[in-house]
Structures are given as C-alpha cells and as structure tokens.
Image (cartoon, rainbow, N blue to C red):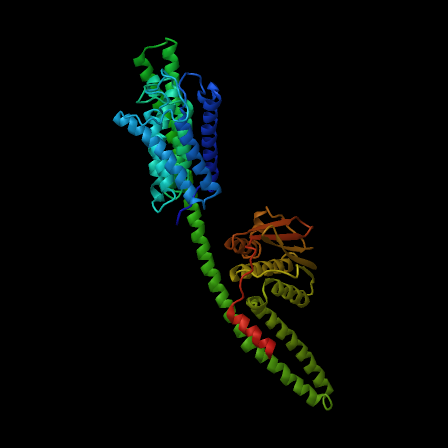
Length: 530
C-alpha cells in the first residue's frame, strides 16, 4: 500500500489467507469423504439433519485450493483461475436451477441423496445461500488473478454477509435463518467454510478496501479495530441474555427487548468511551512524535550551522594563525643559528621562546582538529577516532587506550560526525570535570548497532543528581544526549562517586557501508599516484 503504514498484526496477511484456504480445503475434502464412505458425522457437524451436499463440498475444496495456491504458488495463475472458475460454475449452475426451476441433473451427479432431507428443496441440491456465496467467491478469486484484482475483495463481501447471517441463525437457533428450503437452507459446516473463504479472500488484498481500512494506522482504522470486536461481543451477549430470560419465563418479549436495548446502550457507551480515550491517547502520542521530529529537525539545522562555523574557524586557524605561528618559529630558529656563537645567552632565551611557539603550534593544530576533523571524511570513523584519542592523550598528558576491530564499515556522514563528537565531548568531560588520568575508548558492532564506550578513572558522579545532569555549563551531557537522539540512538552513563565514569552510546546502524564520496575517492587516487 503506497504511502500508508499497516498495523503490525497484519504485516503478513498471507498467514491468514493460507490458513483460511487450508481450512476450507479440509472442510470440503472431509465432507466428500463422508459422502463417499457414508459417514454422517462428516457431513452433519451438529447432528441436526441438515447436511452439506457433495457439490458445495467440491466447490469449497476447489476454492480453498485456489487460496492455498495464492499463498504457496502465486506464479500458478492459470491453475488458480481454473479452480476459481470451476467453483463458481458449480455455485452458479445451482443458483440458476433455483431461479428458473430447471433441473440440470447436476445435484446427484457424483452421489445420490434420498428425498426428504431437511432444509433441502431438491435431493442433493445446495440451498440459495451456498450457491450464491460460492458464485461470488469464485468470481472474487478469478478477479484476484487479473487486472481487476482491486475489485476481488468487494466481490467476496456478499458471501461474507450471507454466511454471517446463517451463522447468527445457528448461534441463536433461529431456524428460519438456516432451515427454509430454497431460501435460507444451509448446513453449519457449509456456512463456516464459506465464512472462512470470504475472510481469506478479503485478506488477500490488504492494499484495497476493506482491508486497507481495517489494517491502516490512521485514527479511523484504530477506532474501528478497537470498537468492532467489542461491538460483536456486546451484541451477542445482550441477545443471549435476553433469550435466556425469555426461555426461563422470567419476562415477556417486550421486557426482553427493553432489557436487551438497555444493555446494548450502556455497553456501547462504555465501549465508545474507552475507544475515544484510546484514540485520544494515540493522538497525543502522535502530537508528541511530531514535536520530537520538529525539535530534532531544528537541532539538525543548528548542528549543521555549528559544523559549518566550526569548519570555517578550523580553516582560519590552520591557514592563517597556524601558518603565522610556523613562520614565527622559523624566524626564531634563524635567529638562534645567528646568535648561538656570539650571544649564547640570547640564543638560549630564543630556544625557550621557540619551545613555547612549538607548544602553541601544537595546541592550535589540535584545536583546529577538534573543530573539524578533516580525516573523518577521508578515513572514516574508526581511523579518525583512533588518531584523535592518541593525539588528545599526548597533548593533555592522559594515558589513553583505543580498541576497535580493523574491519570497521563506513556509515552515513551525519552518523559518523555525531559519533565522533560524542567521543570528543566524553573525553573533554573526563579531563575537565573528572580529572581522569587514564581513559579507554572502544568502538564495536553489536547486533546491527554500533556501540561506543568511553571509560575513565576520574572522580565519578551520581548520574541521578540533577546538579551533574547539567555539568559543564549544560553543554556536556545534554549535548551528547541530543547527538545520540538525532541519529536514532541512546546514551547511557554508568558512574558513581570515586569509581570513574563510563559513557555508552548505542546507535542502530544499517550493516551496509556507506559509499565513499566521489570527490574524496578522486583525492585519494591522486595522493596514491603522486
């Protein structure tokens, strides 16, 4: 169904279709066996004398086989059409006999039934409900293999309604609904088999009405799924309770009708109230989801703007300030060479200044790297994180350890960048707020998710303490939480005072590696050939 989501329960409707087909096939086959072996119980389930005839049993078996083929062998379109046509012809030929009064001599073609059978207008002849329903079902299954398949479900609805009427009659022992020859006469197992075939045929086409409405995720579909089953339960219970009192002589028909009406009104009001509450809850959840999407989109735009500004600052630091500091270092070195013979004290002072300039140059380079890791686009997440952890540890005098499998896939640029920033922020927090002396970073794939852990031996803190939830000016943990949320992941913190801190970031990732951008691939090719 294009552009529409389905309820999870109906993601695989062919299970329902296949089950309905096998059940109908079994009903038809056992009934034919009952006629052939003269086993009355196989052709009269409830022993009321109303038997399923051989012809409807054959048609039901044919149509059940067509449904099974739809699920197991959908490529056998010709066979499905043939089975559907044969089933429809059996029903239509019998229906013509009812309408015209003619006798095509097909009722006892396979087996002979003695005259006088209950609810039977002519020996061996199925009633109008079965013949009409089988005709429509055959047409529906035939249409399902053609360009008009969208109308197949609608063609099965008359059979569903007709069989439902008969089953209601059996449930309440309303004889007029299933015993009148030529009008309502139908066996219980015939009605059950036709009802099952109807459900299976309708479920075969979930992309069109009525299945598209039943399994949809809009408010109307949710309301229908919540109310309709309870409506059936309430109606059956109220009717059964009313009939129970009438049969016991507790009240007359008018009192029974009033009692049934009162029960239905109260029950329907309760059901509608519950359904309305459920719908309101779903709508509130939908509003929250829309708000979350809006907030995430705003965060993405802000993050994108921040990254663009960081990229500009990193470029300025590297291209301007970094080059100027390098130029200063070269000039100082030149002065040292000129004065180390004639003015050794001045040369020593200049050497100290050169050392400071070298440290400053390293700090500027690291700052530019922190602002925008150029290697992330070229080398990927694993290599960039490993290099950053090593450089960060050397620069700040912290012992670091990095672990990750050598074979690590590439991911979407947004995912790699946010994961890199999470590691970066976790390391900075370890240095600034935990006074850590040793930090380890691991990055692995677990159950189709990437899991990053940053562990330090610092002071630690209580994650439930509201003061620490916003440490670092509100930009530490909150920034990591937001970045994890932006790429559909979650952030967990395991820490307690004086025991260190471990930050876990778990992000669901597609197993396929993201393709390398063409510009980066060309740049790497140039570097290899130069």
